[in-house]
Amino acid sequence: MITSRRMAAVDENAEALGVPRKQLMESSGNAVARVCRELVDPGASVAIVAGRGNNGGDALVAARFLNAYDVTVSLLGRPETISTDIARENWDALVASEANVRTVTDSSEFELDGPDVVLDAMLGTGVTGALREPEATAARTINDSDATVLAVDVPSGVDADTGESAGVAVDADHVVTFHDDKPGLGSLGVPVTVADIGIPSAAELFTGPGDLLALRRDPQSHKGDHGDVLVVGGGPYTGAPALAAQAALRAGADLARVACPDHVAREVQGYSENLIVSGFDGDHLEPAHVPDLLELAADRDVVVFGPGLGDAEESLDAVREFLAAYDGTAVVDADALQVVPDVDTEATLICTPHQGELLKMGGQTDADWETRRELVREFAAELGHTLLVKGAYDVISDGDEVRVNRTGNPGMTVGGTGDVLAGATGALASVLPPLDAAAVAAYANGRAGDAAADEFDGGLVATDLLDRLPAGLRSEHHD
Image (tube, rainbow, N blue to C red):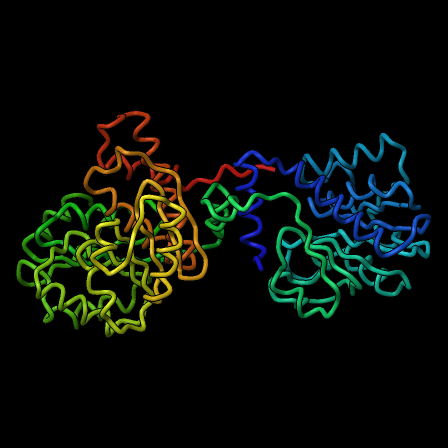
């Protein structure tokens, strides 16, 4: 089962792995034609109703595989407005072949000539909301016909994730969907064929550019919509909390705050005027500070707990008390990690250990990344929290799903890169589910490290990653 948002990411990742979308469209169209041939015998009439996106493109490919049938293709809209190059190429191929094609630019022009089968390929899984014209009229006309209706990927007007529709929707008799089942299709009560179109499993397992698609910002958003992050740490170390907070800003958070001991607060503030710093008494975190921290954390989206904190017993007791009382989202890093297995908390935790810290938490590791992948998944399930285990291959799991990140380089063993990762994870956890936030943070942090290594080789330092994080998070999406 895969959501429409995750499917878009997997498509993009497959392309990055060397499987072009054009190739996937060819496989999808072939699969649609195969199901169509199972529904009716050669010579039957098939009406293809195609939209101007890749969903329509899949059906345009199918038309080429249905030579034994009487096929007509209706494109909803002008050919020059077809939204992707690969869909346009498939339209042009049909036109050049003198196939029976027509364009529908006015909903009153849409008609069906009593076909045996209608292929509904108006809108795919990425489109939600009520159908507009001419799609709405086309859907009503399809529903009024006596034809068998085969929907491509999802019936137009139906939300692939929920199975609900905001208005008129195509009433399909059969659905052919691609790669994996979609959550909303089961509620439709019709047969669903899941077609393997050759997307490698690596496109789901390994992080890639598709994972960044989830980060697109609403142009109408306001300050605070993209995260208000609190970093709790410092005492023995001043650089770590400052790096984490600056990374949160570079990863898109609107506000980053640092709560640290008074004696280092001025130094932390000195790293950047963009930080909001709150000091507390003493030279390290103690249980007496927890009530104020809980109050400060209550209005924040995410807390990053641990950078530079140290392992004083009082500090670890304070972490235990904080987590036991906290019910928000927290990224737990560094020395704070060791208390997580023993704490009963309502909080949503993302833990970011390196392999030594993982062992200290009670987890297991292995030199083989595939073995380690399963060990991390099992330990995440046991903990009930999301794990981001750092290594040459980062392994991310919530105990159910697993992602593996391959960006990064040996130069990133320098101190502070983990603090940057924790801060970036905090920012992303403000706007994404925990597993996605951790996976995207690992991918972007590694990309930033790779860009720094290109310039500095083995001499990169953690602050080099800060400047390169925005580019590491930038999607270069194209059709």
